[in-house]
Image (cartoon, rainbow, N blue to C red; front, side, top):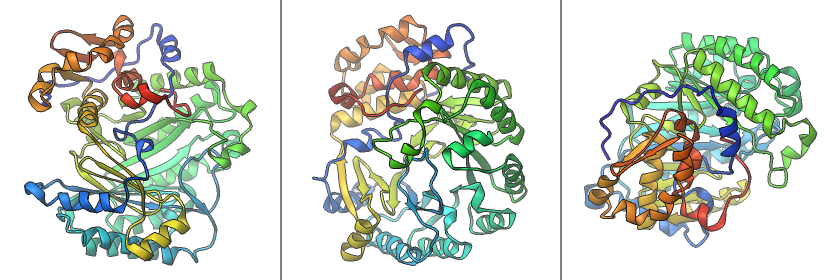
Length: 468
């Protein structure tokens, strides 16, 4: 659906905002895809992935590629972390892992897929900077020999500030990385100690300054609220320090405490966590202070400077969303390499084995390590269009769905539209004969609004909790 209007940025409402946050504090996915990865089943394996890759050459499709590489290794455990990781201080596993990444990449390339240019390359983990500069450079060069990279491709890497210095940042820039994300979480010493991730503000400040001097196009900082010992007082100080850093983008995630699922979280004492009311107060404070400091609220859990490409895309109504979160890149097929990595080729969603040994065994034996997947049906694709329109543009027009999907929107989604009435009554959504669109206040509640159109949420509910 073409969006022609210029979108303004929402300002945090001052009246009744915390009460609304509390009312709509519901478990929900971050919608980096729809369906979400938990809908994948083991019935879809390597053959489904192979066929999806081959389908890229059918019918003259020329979708660009997005490439994600997962590096699972970490030198120490962060207690809050829910990522797929391997804790080790030794590098003896790295060489074998890099060889497997190359083998998997070659299996993809030899599948007969159309090798269109990589427009977005992201390395995540784990800790990508666990690898030495030599190992990182070697990996990048191997991938560049297999995949064609667009001349001005986005190349981003997640960095643990404790693993780099100015010289290492210079090496990353020399490898072609032009975007960098620092995982900070909180600057308060007591909070850092409680989650086993201690780093000084001064060290991060020097790294951010160095990244700018080296010409990184965008500097992102990841923060988490809801951690042990956090309060509005402590987080206010952290926010002041964050604002002083003046990053281009900020990701502010809500901590989800699920010790039964993520073993490291068992080291966090539940009595040290802020309660639900305190979490909401911290979130409200963060939104208020970041907007007052000049950051635009992009949606979900992201903020950006007005000059950043993400803010510009949001204003122009051309924002997109994928497994890296909000992005300026148009819809691209995603190839994920590495343990637990996710791929999405057209309607096919694939995830690799989440166990390192199983991943390496499968790649060495057959070239791929797929263990589950999902092929979207027509209903999935229609709902994907709806959910992404809400999350990225904040509006949709009913008539467009008759043209693109041959469905009468109001008839097809009659039950879902009825469930929107509470959002309309609270002034979060406007619904008329033309379509639906978020109000300025509604932008802060895009997740629960989008969830109304998620058939899997309706069918089976959700595990875990994510505050807005």
